[in-house]
Image (cartoon, rainbow, N blue to C red):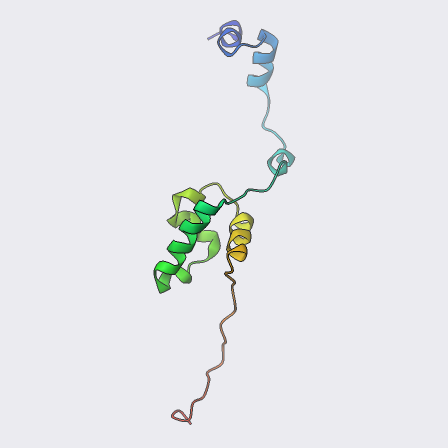
Length: 105
């Protein structure tokens, strides 16, 4: 396919078509532009229902939630963490020491 045919199909000039196709990959700064990803209320409700479904789901790291929920594919860990905090969830470190009860003593 020639540049003229591509330009005609896309609706741009031949020079613009050639320029767009020959461009080298963009620098990383373009990935950071724009607004942060938002997770809307319906998806938040699905996340909440998934997390509260079983005790095992509560232990899943938030960064791994896109592996279980297809709606979260392509959404950053930061956006998922922000949504979880807004819903009232928090990550609290578990105590490492054993709590002694009278039966153990």
